Image (cartoon, rainbow, N blue to C red; front, side, top):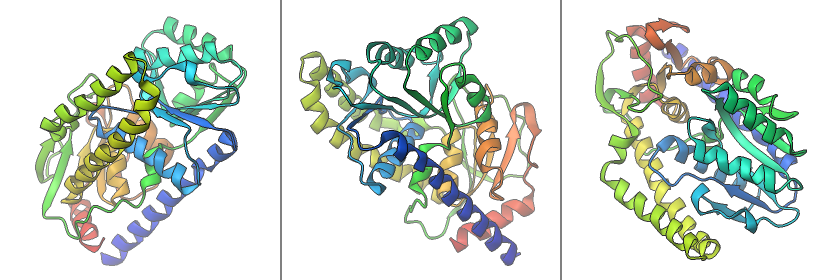
Length: 346
């Protein structure tokens, strides 16, 4: 049994290294140009924070320093100079589920036809075919838009938006291996379950010893007040015409504060043998920590699409589709026992 566990861990580590290497195509796209990193998250969604810190880790590894970093609501396209490259934060907000973010992308695409625009790895989703067609027309009008996507379905959709489309894993993988300071887990299972519109419907998973059930909003808790202070501060300075100067100070402080949230989330995960989640970044965080994880699909298939594209090779990953239809083998008690042994070794 121990030999099997060690082999699974070795295979998982190799996969995680391969996922990080796939991002190197971004180095060619950015080149030596000054670049803006736009639409960073200033909220308590740990998944988006993992993406941001993974992106920043990628920059550091390759000696890249953004000319400017800003959230979507404290960024002025007038700050873009000739020759600047615009990098939009990755994630799952490309589409009409979160229109404010898509509107910023479209505004910059239309107003800056001579600047290269790179959308970091995204999952695309439109609930309206008309909205999708309208947005695609906007992006198609720009000759130098490069769209990175996280799954095959998004890849097919993105080809209507640009001729420059790349299938890449989520930027959070750049944080591998993530150290949480917990040498041995003290609890059995953790379940991270969505409480928003992306939550799926799942049958019960019998036989799993779940100690903790939570979601990102509950995990963040009262710290949401501190997050709101950062958001209001950035927005307030921006509205007073001091946004660019404020970004240099407040964004640096926000990055440091949000790193603590990521570390706390990692510690929570590391205290458990295995993770059950319908949060994509619950799955990715578990992978970053070498924890076995059971992935439940979200409302529109984002999670299963991601696992199919990138992580299904890992023996630490099991996928359970919505409505209880397993696609990669429902985890057995033997697998869960192995997860405990694996966590104890790490």
